[in-house]
Length: 331
Length: 263
Image 1 (cartoon, chains in turn orange, purple):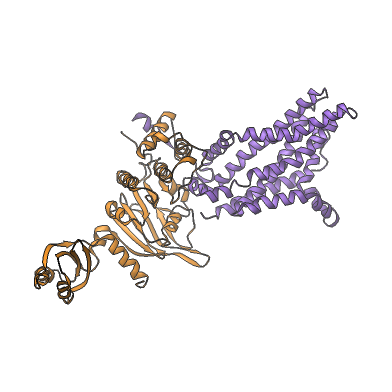
Image 2 (cartoon, chains in turn green, blue):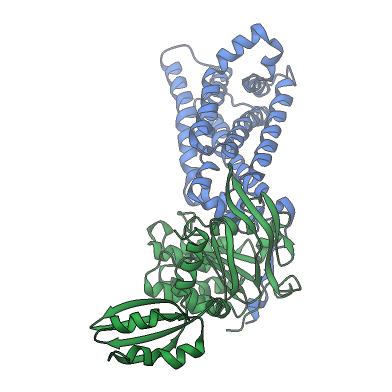
């Protein structure tokens, strides 16, 4: 279907390639600091994963960006417009899905989308209704479009939330835990929709489901206790943990091999998972050359049988846990 | 697609941003949930039902009542009961939306805080005036005609009813201001209700200690409304000015407070 971006007359960013820019953004509630000097840059047309444990300050950041809260200090801009002073203008180009979406329950899904659409555009009824129908089909709610929302399940409300957030084809979508209330199928659909939306929009979403982030995000920021721990393209974040990891599978007894490997100065850590009589070693090293030359011989020296050996990747979960625990002082 | 291209961005800016859509939604709530019908029937029963009953008893047992007797009763019932209705009906308008999360949702769209509040004020005013006041005035004259009594001249009736509308606007804006200021329904409902119940006592005390305050109290306006409906002139402009000013102050305070609200 050929479509027209209502906002295509606007530039997609503030001119320097970033859709969202914050500088020292802070928020304090009754003496408790929820956000400490957040400086964030979200590239245009990216799927930006905003990660953090519960209470990290993700929702506070989102509400500050949308003008639903006022910053205690610092500033922020979306499309080059100040998030506090120009909030209404900013919101014309932003679609938002709240963590717990709320609607007027006397309305049906179709009426809800019609109501939301009227904030952004007007035009022939047929054209508006076509846009609404398309949004309903995208989130697979077309068969429930005329039922009152009060009978909707959590997943259906979430899908309606995604439909209403993108009803005006926004330049920026801000989604707060978009997959939190969904079953695996629903999550897969949401990720697919997000990937489709990036063709026209930038997607900024908060989550703590790390698998999803690794699947669809291209840039990631990690927040903990209101502080930004890292912000980087996901490949950079996964590669930049200060070492390389190798995976080795040993059949039978692994203890001797484990002892010899951990004794090497260039081995920083080894973790072991045992499955079906096989031990899977995850070996973090600081010297790639030494590892590739010596690891297999070290393992086989005592008669152990190595069935698999490969250079591994650091998972996002590892990076995330390492950073968050590090910032919590190792606890 | 040609039709798709004909969609136009909504251009309203400043405090008007989103007002039209919210007003439409607020009106839709009155129509879609049949609130207009419910309120019309409640006040027909409470105000004109009692008038009809009293007229019926008067015709059958006591001396034949006059139009003026009925008019005094009508305005007394209208002025006493409807403010309670306004407070009860609108007390959850702002607090309820804040608690349910719908306020956060609509304010994430290009809707100004002013438009959020003023659309509620505009829609509620219109429907409350229509169902609680104007419809009741029309019904009252029809009842008089049904009993064979002379009806109240339309202009006099309109003037009297307009004063009642101003009176209700005071309670509506007060409730709106409290809704914008508090996060729970208790004070939003309780403060106006207590004031409504105690206002006669307050007026008595005020007449002793601060007599200049009495004509500024909202209830003083009701006497002016009755006088206008009876075809008499207005005896004092003070209640009009005071209630109108207070309503404006309450509205301005609502907007001031709501602009600082965080969601």
